[in-house]
Length: 193
Image 1 (cartoon, rainbow, N blue to C red):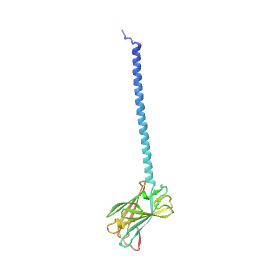
Image 2: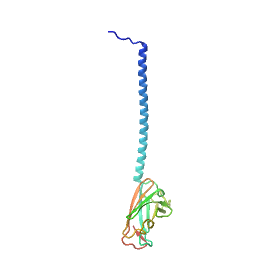
Image 3: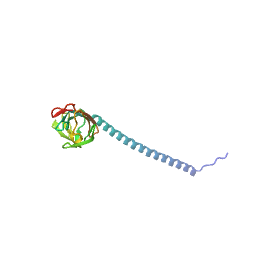
Image 4: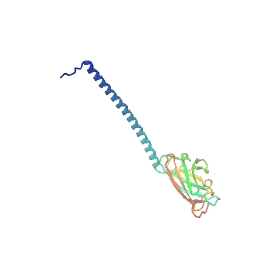
């Protein structure tokens, strides 16, 4: 049998080709690893942000301490007044960043915070705890939220037997729902609702 004889030049070319293929494989693997590491880091960051947002929505709650309605002169409830506090374990709640979704049988509107209540805005005032008129920092602080129902309702306020729902959404997206039920018989200037 006659075998072809390889000379030194042929052997060197095979070694260089193998080396080039090996370097190319290492480069492709390095680029792929870099992409995977960047993607994993970005996903971890997004998951952490989502977890923080979810925790804030669960733990940041507003508690309604009391609610009254001013019967004024229309024969129905003209103004709703809610006294609120933050729930234990909540972060500070800034009512200037909050919205209230007011829903009744006849109307639905979103209210934002302002100095005085109107048909599209609710008012706030510090009641107890010596804090801000808009920020609940401490569990002992109380803020009064005032909603001008007469400006919202076409019938001049909530009449006897009517009901409405207030959804308070704070800056973290946490929602507190409070149902308002006007008694069938209204007596006096203020009625519990």
